Length: 221
Image 1 (cartoon, rainbow, N blue to C red):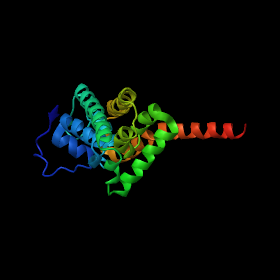
Image 2 (cartoon, helix red, strand yellow):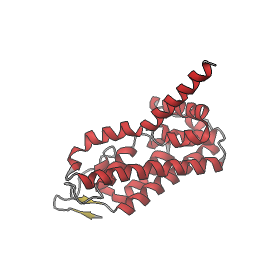
Image 3 (cartoon, helix red, strand yellow):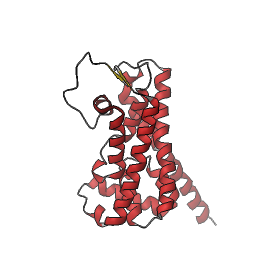
Image 4 (cartoon, rainbow, N blue to C red):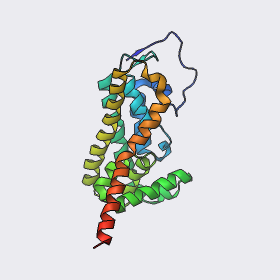
């Protein structure tokens, strides 16, 4: 990783801004943020999607920010943070049970917990664990919810690994591919991040449409 130090170090770090986090902490910051977002309930507000996409973007030579990250380093750090975080959240759920979520004061966190429970009930363990990776807040609370509801450890480990790799590597590669194709594309980060958030919800939308179609067919019989 190379940094342009001509402007001096950042005076403050905005933990809600992906580029600020990456400028301050680099690849290590990716692992820490994803671990907190997927493993600790206090991390539900962190910018996982935008962080992954921006990190991939900053692995290219065509950015204007002066920050250059290592693509292999980003891919390893993102996978490690997301996979270890999910396992940590699951273990917390198994140990603390539903009381862990019940003590949460944030309405957004409670809504995410309800959505996580619905995913597990409606789609089964495997699909719910994979789909949750693509939904902000839900990917934070589903892991302890899965532990509290007794999802088998092996089932959770296999599918959270599959979903975690698909989510992290997919967004990193998407950012890298776009940055490699369009010079100085990082100048348009805000609309790009908004687009990535929408795209990240497509797997869940597709699954919801499929489930609705199945219910209609069953009701017509």
